[in-house]
Length: 231
Image (cartoon, rainbow, N blue to C red; front, side, top):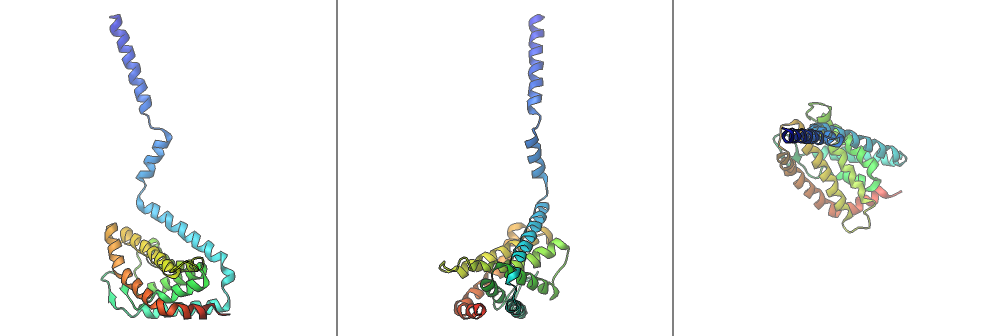
């Protein structure tokens, strides 16, 4: 009996130790809760962070808003808006191929920097919504219009990339890629579209639209930037 009882005690103690070791740690619990958080929540947090960065960027560049910058911003927004009304091809659920409707705001951003460019793009996005956009909720509105078009202001990266060969075109690609990300997330979150399907759908009109912008930028960017940068 004694050996059996001793073995039983050892076995019971081992089981207790095993149960104690199996108890989840704080880190494991935190990671589990992190994994359970819906993707939409993280996207909403990301949107808020991007908005905060936009406001910070615009605030830091407020001294750049001279009368000349405001006048050229209004002109660039107006040109982009008018060109967006000319649709070479219209997608069934929103989005169109246009005759370089993004280019005026992009060139404005390239001349005046990201802060003014982001604000000009955001204003253009609101105008696009007023033109006949869709509103499901604030998050969809921000992703589909405000952030997507504000991304065009990232063409202001041309200023630090000015000495890099093809710097303007690199900044244009970065700007459009960020617009694609914003539009893709909107499609994935609010329009019941699979993520990669949303990428393909938005890329179907953004790729040719960007190609047209780049082709026209070849003869136009030097004289236009010279005019915008003149004192």
